[in-house]
Length: 485
Ligand code: ADP
Image (cartoon, rainbow, N blue to C red):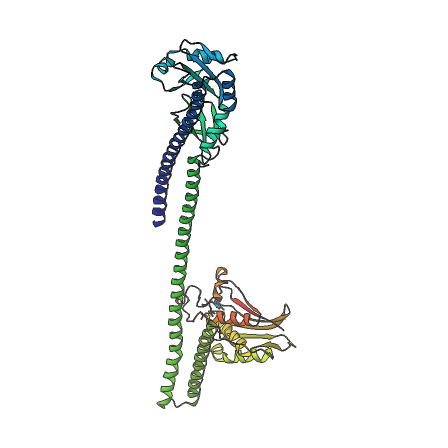
């Protein structure tokens, strides 16, 4: 739920962010265009002022055609200069070039009339070109109309280039003429997307400063890219949260299972301690009271007490060794050991319970087995745990078979029974600490669940292994394999 809420909130705020950043981008672009137009106006007006000042000084001095030619030649921005008197006669230049007719025709219109009366300056369209017109004083009290055809090339190079030099590079700035043709552009216009334009107040009429989005870098696209990036990151976050939830759930479940197993372990061990203790106490008290007169019975009681004490010691040894293993403190001392006495001693310890439950015991130790380097106490205890289990988990068919032979270049000690057997899917788990098939009570047999864990530890400490072959109802066969060297 929190992950979904985070995802939803994240998505909504991302969309809002995308919208507001587009808006911000537009506002910034508008500001930038206005600023660029203002700067261009200032530069254009400055250039016009300078040209008109030069024309005025030259004309006021009564200049002849040669002086005017020199002025045009010395002012690159002036492509062509015309001087026209009040009667409409062209005083300068003497020659005619293609296009001049357009200019002269434009200067005959009413637009120029106001210039004669009120002075000032005006930008006119003559054919396809812009002409700057102004009435200036000639020698004496004559006045002439000066018309200047500006060189677009020089305008581009000297005015616009200087004006837009320091502008940011994220957008393309261009100047468009009255037919929307780019006169100047800072950066390539190929594939660029027009954003907005601001008209120029100075300079040729209907010229505009326009802003373009360079190809492949629109504001929307970059916002979208960021949006996609954030969405992926957010998705990743949600996945991580979900995965963490699953992992936490599993860990918690495992912890709960482990806690349950430990609780079972404590209950089982306590019970296993109590049973032999109460038997010992009962028989000892009976003997103490001197009520048993029959020597044979008394002997029997002593054997019970001895057997139960042995069981107690085995159980306590198991628990102590297990806690040593858990603490990493269990050490093993390997010494060359004869196998047959080891097997026999182990089985002897079980002579009474085996006999009492009528077990058929088969022992087979391969002849001429070499001495094997092992920790006799540890391996004896492992073997005892296997025999104990064989007795514990047998019902009607009471047979225990212990088999020692050489196999795979090592010693194989097998303990087989014809008891209840173990389902295949449990084979791996029965060697885990505290694990008992179907938990403890379902099988009606007490146990601590650490016996096989200890067997496996002993096997691995000897660089060997323990394996199980078993089927429910068909008995089990545990094999402890230890290397010979
Ligand atoms: P426990 O103290 O419960 O016997 P172990 O670690 O010795 O603990 O054994 C783990 C589980 O493996 C037992 O609870 C039992 O279910 C199963 N098991 C072990 N040996 C045998 C066997 N010979 N036959 C059937 N089941 C066995």
